[in-house]
Length: 66
Image 1: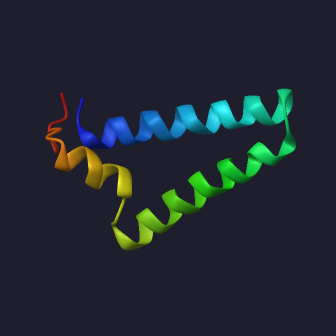
Image 2: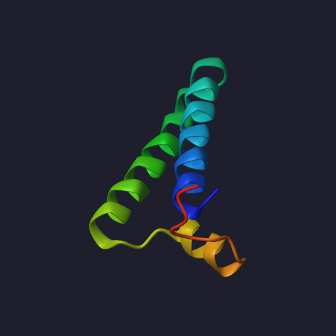
Image 3: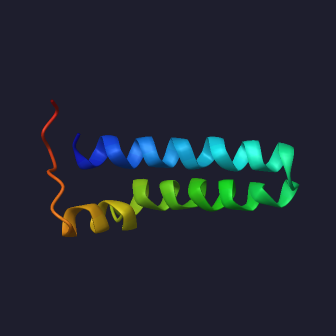
């Protein structure tokens, strides 16, 4: 998998988990969901994604579709 797919997979998984935790434990988990959404929004406008930067620094390939 390339960096883009990993970032999307992790972001989607974290959003789903935080919604499940919000329903089952505490509504305050939605703050984590909001943080992920805000980070994705700023990444769309600035081009900087902290997770992509970390993945790139550990050697995950980028740009390769399959």
